[in-house]
Length: 314
Image 1 (cartoon, one colour):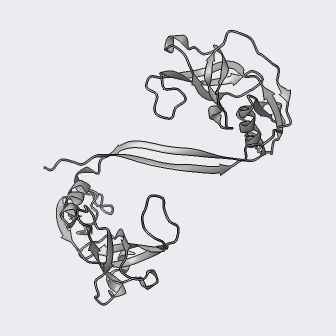
Image 2 (tube, one colour):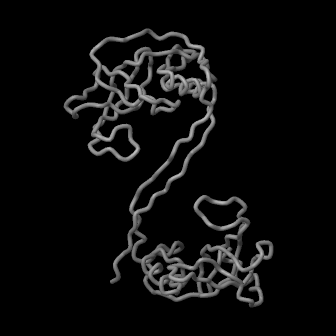
Image 3 (tube, rainbow, N blue to C red):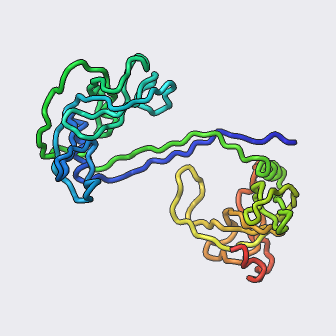
């Protein structure tokens, strides 16, 4: 049996968002070493602040400055920090109820070990040396032996050069294994073949195979070679250029039903003006030298397929 493939994958993108007046004041305040909360109509002070009362749903704008010291309400030890986390040595994740607040803020606590952390311990903010108006302006919390440094005070939320937007990077690192069925499909593609699997019950051929029939739910093992040509069942015209993708817009991405398959796969259409691509267009794969999968599909020159032959695959 061939070795099942696996590879490290990273999904990463920047998430850009604008800030309303409450979040803008909160993050700008962190830049200025000031922690702000918001007071509800019931008198509760929420930190981090929100724009709508979680109980009544009413809009709230009554900003309050709270202390940079507080009390740990619960915690968990992080033995192995991951890239991008607040500290690169083992630390505790803690919920801290800051002095003057009625809710807890999640952040890191710099401690020597789990025996040095406890619920109810006093901590204070360690500010980052360079601050830009993000939650990372709080570098972490650290143990603190004193009492509250200040009482909560009303705050206007007004600062010079207020932060109005943030970019939050999102990243997921994981190891992906395509499994037995897709490993066979990928290995066949490297030989310029498209191999699917037939369901023993409904007899449909699925490309790419998933190891089980999505309709009947039974395992599939019988390999069937399909294509190489196929039919465009539907398509879209892409007008926005993606980063790190060297393809000029506009271009066409299509669902293509390979001959002998009962499931359409997707691929890029080239070798024809984008506004001439159509449903029923007959296409064939084009491979780059040394490529392990088709670079794109191009017209075969055959007459268009009759709609009745592919309507169930749209």
